[in-house]
Image (tube, rainbow, N blue to C red; front, side, top):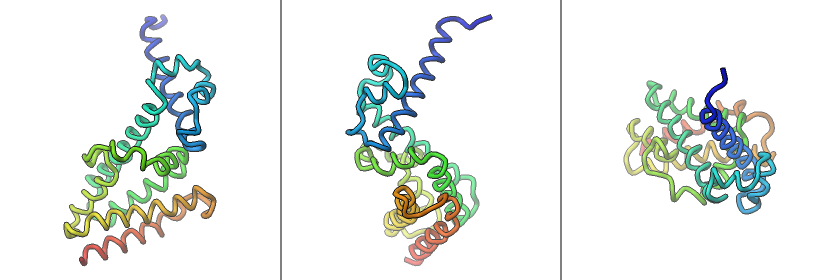
Length: 198
């Protein structure tokens, strides 16, 4: 027996929306938001521009939603690691492994979050569950980093992960980033230990 027509439309609508997001993410990572037209996205998905507008009011709203939802998902994963792992060292190693794995498995997503962060970070909520920087800062605050050192330590720790990813993105580092996770984690741990000492 086939499902009711409304149920099928709902699934098809969700599938179309997911395909729009996937194609837009690839195009935004490759060409930037400004360099990507609504027509480019619609052609990539195989739908009309009108069908795309039924899901997203504008290309800019699509770009913003993609950033905020994916950034929040990464922040939530970091918060889950913070809650699950017993020591700061294990937490930081797990976060570095997560970030390197994300880069290797979803390079377009990582590139989009990295390259377009300056356009969207102003709209990111302060809650750690939605904000990567706050999720990392919360982890460090919980590990007895002096309050005056948390912001700089967070920035430096994130830089230890992000800069190798930038080099990998532009071909200056070869191979999967996950193969370098241990070295990156060691650098992050050095930064955090220095901050602990004040």
